Image 1 (cartoon, rainbow, N blue to C red):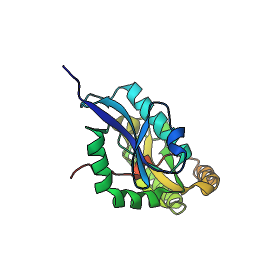
Image 2: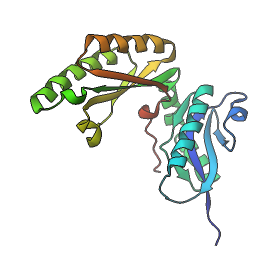
Image 3: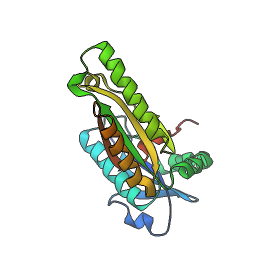
Image 4: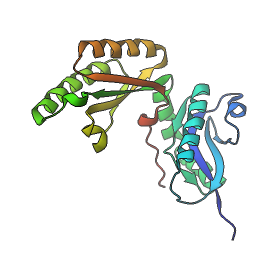
Length: 210
């Protein structure tokens, strides 16, 4: 029986001369005007994502991010055909270009705040959460946008009390990194960790209906 083929969508990028030729091997671009969907062939199914699929997704998005502005798609997004993807790009073109203007020239910084073994009772937890909220407010003032990320229960038990992603201008990355370091020293009771720069994973919400 013939297996229906589809296109796995990694993200939508601003297309500039030569970018398509520099993308990771095995990928191609479905273009509509100034935007291009970065894709690769895959079975059209709802199979569970394997670790290898997630690693491939991260690799392709990260490589594209080094070349151009990209709106990452949710991992595992698959379109039935070239035609359905082209129609989706056309239908959402202006929404996508608006989103592109927001993230263009920016990178994402993820900050995780923990108190480790210090959190042993409710009152102590509330005290540390107040300190973490204060730290996040300060960092928010140095970013174009902020998304608070929920803490999984298992990490909460390990003392992680707050996590957020910040959209930071690329040229201000070193400055933001310095501010995080300063805040970590100012709040010695907290363990403040910064990772990045990342593609704007946490700042993109794509619509697939219609």
